[in-house]
Length: 106
Image (cartoon, rainbow, N blue to C red; front, side, top):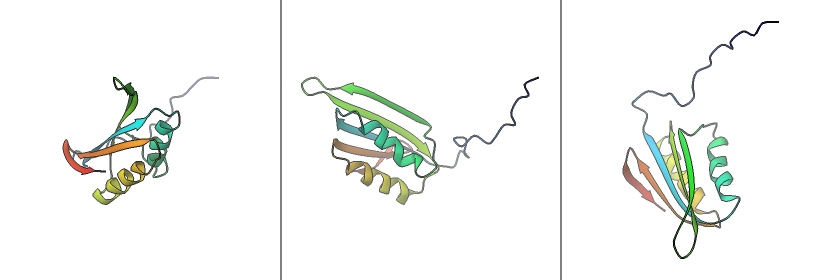
């Protein structure tokens, strides 16, 4: 039996350079479910984020910082996702940037 390379399917993250890049910057109380809940909003829309990072931060009160970068969204979709993230109980704030410029501060 020989292994054949699978046919390459289009990379969902490789879009035209004209597609705007959005970065969602989330601050949340430390909670084990918040990272998966944030990423799930993109999965429900069949989107694979270009990048996801999280880290524990904060000197006095620890908090979770999550950054998600995604392309292929319309402005209203990105704003809707930011509002949905902001509704999660442990979320402190959401900052939405479009191509590096602040777009929405929820």
